[in-house]
Length: 254
Image (cartoon, rainbow, N blue to C red):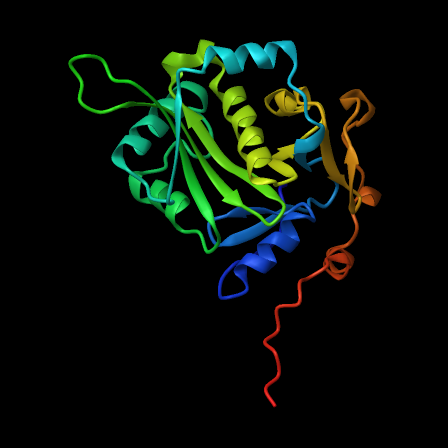
């Protein structure tokens, strides 16, 4: 049974709250910040890459070279019909039975556009064929901008370009963006030991996870077994008491 600890993200203090809680393992979904808090399992770890310490592997360098024909374009968080069409092709190929499979264009637009913080849509395009007018869309990533890094909220790409390893390329390019902007981290979402779908995140060196209230290096994924025991999870009241909140109260007027 899945359980989450969550809070609304709205108002003038949304940016500060998001920055503070993201450093404590929370993720954003539209106007909500959440963190897994299952009763008998604590195996969902927020993961991030230390940009300054990251060096690509040989295979990752090949992926970068294989996709150097793509053009990156960062735009405001606004959903387009082309975005949605690519999103549908991606889901049908990769996640036909997933929780987002029935998402319509209005729900998709809400996912992209309902953000109370600084967010960007990062597009990856390539030159059109001679008989086409506009550039072709290869991949898209909804990205949040924190005070200490970039958070990859959701990405999707053209299934016909599977051999290009676009999922890997998008992460590598976000590391490049963060490095150019002087931001120390790229947040990847949650990593779960033993989960085949999450295993790719452990393939990036300089990765660290938020575990038991602190960020620790993920040097060897095999050293982290799933924690599934009632005593592995603090009671909700204790979890809330341990959360560090930013100073977001308005200043007193004389």
